[in-house]
Length: 107
Length: 114
Image (cartoon, rainbow over all chains, first blue to last red; front, side, top):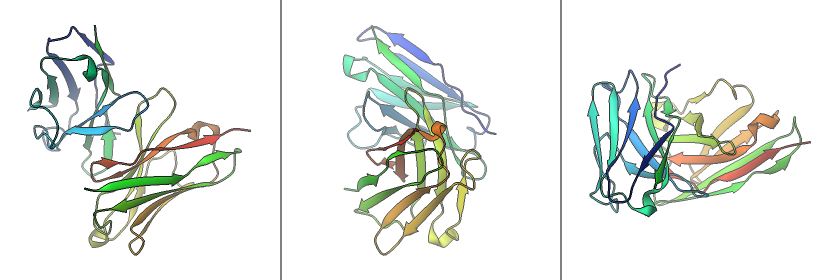
């Protein structure tokens, strides 16, 4: 079955830049979406179609794509950015697939 | 603004059944991308199943671990999405989310325990 691979954890100091990667063989052909999940809350969409920000998501959050890897970049990391981040895409049949999630820790 | 509100769930013994309903306001479900996702305690997100839009035949697909036990239903008149869960196992204990497009419900806990 199709898999998306994320690093389990990323740690950065406040003000630095956090980069979270997501790798999958179908990513050159299928869009990626990113969700932020704070403790005890439902996930929230923060990036769609690889690089597009929904309304209300700050400009310091960006997405990029290169080959089989998509990257979520958070510049000027703040304490409120500490959360779990999940990438999501679809396989060739349109079935939803999630990455394993990345815990972002703000030191 | 689209609002997604879940209800149902609860505590059931192994082999029992539960139903979770997702009520949506602000958009029609008839041709929306509708998925169910679950999250076991302390774990990541796991896709459970989907129902296609009416224009695509309204067919369903399920993850291998729930096939034959779970059923996804859409009611276009009520604008609701249901997840009927039968023959539940302890490993089905999780928070269950409906995902309407990219909008998540608040999550509903289903606990399977003797």
